Amino acid sequence: MALLMLSNLHPDTTEDQVREFLGRYGFPPPDEIERQEGDGTRPSMTLTFRTVDTAALQQFRSEEYTSELQSHSFISY
Image (cartoon, rainbow, N blue to C red; front, top):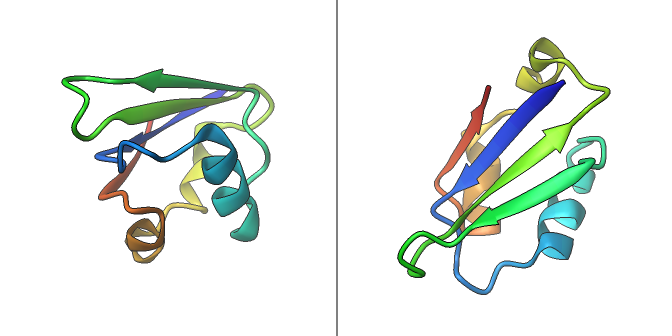
């Protein structure tokens, strides 16, 4: 199992947009997405991949993709 956190998202970013965006870059679909609102200005989402290990998920991480999603960081753990 692997987790991916997308942080500092635009407040209007939807789960469907995240799925579509990650799918364009070869990510498998997440099994679960949990949104963390924080103070509401720049929320984050934690994606759970039950059939992907952390090492495999690391192959997909790249800062060059973040600006397109209006996000500033991919953090996997």
